Length: 324
View 1 (cartoon, rainbow, N blue to C red):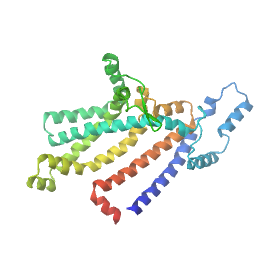
View 2: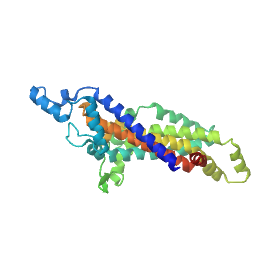
View 3: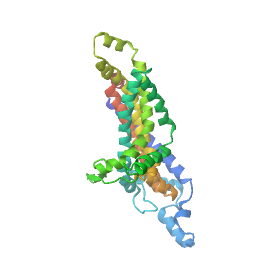
View 4: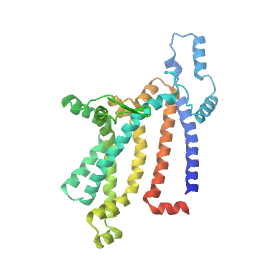
């Protein structure tokens, strides 16, 4: 197990190094921030001074070496616009995005697994068919349109929920969170629901397929023949065995939800990393863009590692393979 974990950590470090090269080169070949950040009325001497201060006068490989050296010390560069460390800017916005993404994933579990379980147990029932038909909407409807419809319905017409911002927050260990206050939860309700619709449909269909595949198996028939209650058969034998693909999808979707929360944050004016990256792209704030992309890469790799470790908890066969 320890050797396997070391191997996975080494692979993760290699992936991070490869992604730093790809991201850095990809971002630096697009556009010229000098044309946006420096006034056209500035003379050549002033332009050259600002370019030198930004480090844009160096060759690309030197800029990358400087970035990589700083990254090893926890410094991902300074924002051209805010003149602050890029990591500090992202860290200030990260709690808002994380709580929104985690809430959306939890909602997808709370709704998707029970609905998928019911649809799998009663596939020919009317409610089961309605559930599967409704899941198509989660895949088909664009999130920005759903967000606007939620605002029109629950904020404008009914007046039940606020449409923008995080609302009142509470502080824990120096970090402010919205889910700790009632006003913050009200502000989070619509964006979290909007962000979770696709994942609900995905988990629902995955759970339903797993149930339909597991029910005819011999060990389920044997469990029923032993006289176990239907609830024990479903929640112990069926649900436990279909949780591995569900955990895989939810783990990967957590990273995807964090990365692609940009649309939802823009629609609901949620002050997270997505809003920051959109503003940074508009002004070609390269340090912030690179730092954001690297943070997303690290989040994905960490989640994948956690999912792999959860495999060993959910499936004994994986534990045996890691010992071999």
